[in-house]
Length: 106
Image (cartoon, rainbow, N blue to C red):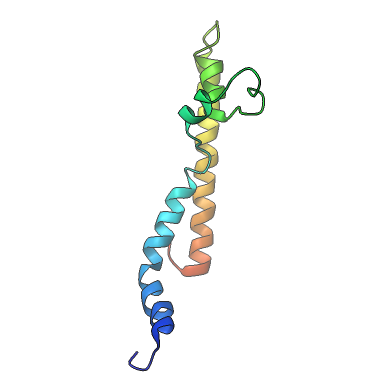
């Protein structure tokens, strides 16, 4: 380490030190990949762009709460599917992280 230049110190010491924390944050953020801000999408929707700006959270709101007949079970099923996809993404990211860096959540 005494003869290492600045780039070698960054690559072999600093990045190797923060790699477990970085991989943990990456794995946890993979679960949020399916979540788009409800407020952003809902407030920017109008009748002209409603078909192209529909996301899962606004669709659940419209199906379960804003409809004339409240279908709570259908909205719950869609939300459960969204959570299940997020869980699958976390598991896949954890397995890839273990293969590449030997660092994972479990």
